[in-house]
Image (cartoon, rainbow, N blue to C red; front, side, top):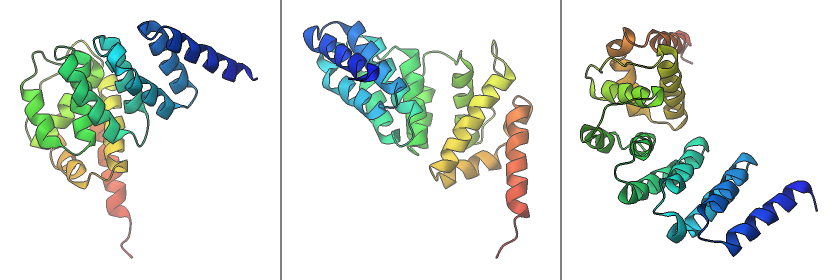
Length: 206
């Protein structure tokens, strides 16, 4: 038996023998994800919901795995929708839910949920999400603080590319239309998007 298979078997036995030990469950799911077995990881987490639902770490890991895996957008939305029922005050999960709504083209719902947020963004990714939602609406975003512009722009660009890959034409169009609203605060991201748009316009139509 290969070393990886031995490790997987040991993790599985630990979870089976001690289903209430959340550390074993989280470690095993994280190990599966790290070894390109994300589907097995989320299936494991889903099966163990009765044992993990009360702990935010359980929901946070499921959100991270589904967020990072291409093709898991629908599961990401389902997972975070359930997560905030159990952990309604967890800021990390609330922002993950916003992101999952955005990636599922449910912009209206995302805007509504964000309007009821108890606190403003703190992390660069959270600020990047704030800018995306504001541009979708065509309203001026707040100026971020305590984070670096390049970090916020990096998240903004990563999500922008994801929206393009997902074929969200309306979302991308609205971001293009209102891009000037973010130009002062996010020069790195807006410059890159402007370059992309310019190149697209230069492509001759057949």
